[in-house]
Image (cartoon, rainbow, N blue to C red; front, side):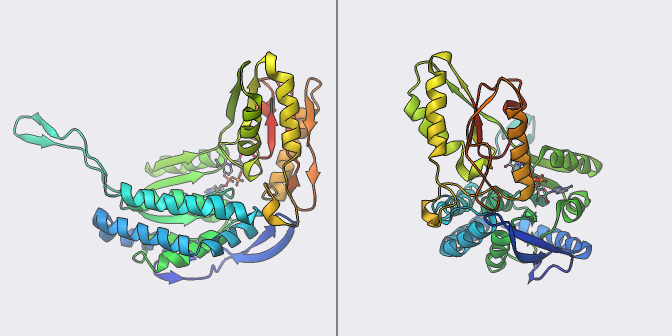
Length: 381
Ligand code: NAD
């Protein structure tokens, strides 16, 4: 972990990391103790006065250095991400590393173009303006679906704006973020970024409850978002919540079905559907309904996963036994409805936490499978 200027090991209980491809444990990562979380927040608080007064140029330069370092360490970071999440390595290298690098480069630029609009004399003898000030210490809490990109999305804007951060990756996927901690320690002043690991109920809850934290940024479950709002209300912290989605796809009667299917095959099943923008609920016109369902089903059935040749794989497993049983039970409840047909998939695959790419037809708008986020490789039409 990174606390202040120190790279330290957690002194708390060990978190077991499970390989999603095999369901076997492959590492143990000790969690932060109460005192270590205290120290991380204290380090961020202590760093804030000086960091908040750095110039945009200084912050921009450090963000650019970080982007370059992530690019240089891309293979190592991608290896950890693929190992921890079960993702196909070639896809992490192609998609997630460049996106993380680009995020830091984007915010390196944004740091230098902060605008303060409506400057003017609205009261005789006085000049009024809006200026953007840093908020303070931001507690950033990330989920397991894109660990490194989540770290980038949380760190880059906060740092560009002159805030200090305590970042907690998901207890299930800390490896790439811990590697990032080593890189960050060589670039940013002590305490500006702190990275700690541990479970949500203990380490996460302590972070969001601490009155020295000014803002909480969470990506995760709605229930966790409710806990964040409740904690934030006690000391009026600002919040930034990203709690999932259920992206609709509307297919009109004159649509080009081949192109629709190609899009759905990619964006409905990418990352095994563990994506808050997954194109997972389709509304199709009567004129094309049967053709679409048939074509989408064969496209979904052709998705390659679990191949020994990893560079052939288009999809990995779900992250955990818990997520696997969650997805399986959504599909089972849908399948138990008489009007629904599971056209392809619908079952576990291989060892580990793989689930077959699944297409569900004749779903009604009111059905649970259409209404709730499944976060798995499941598309309803
Ligand atoms: P989660 O909300 O439990 O976990 C997300 C993060 O919040 C983790 O770092 C976790 O340790 C932390 N956390 C949990 N409880 C906390 C608490 N009381 N205080 C502070 N931090 C806490 O989500 P999950 O179990 O990883 O996933 C459950 C569901 O959330 C998924 O099935 C999916 O629907 C949704 N999800 C959405 C996204 C997204 O990108 N929007 C990402 C992951 C999960």
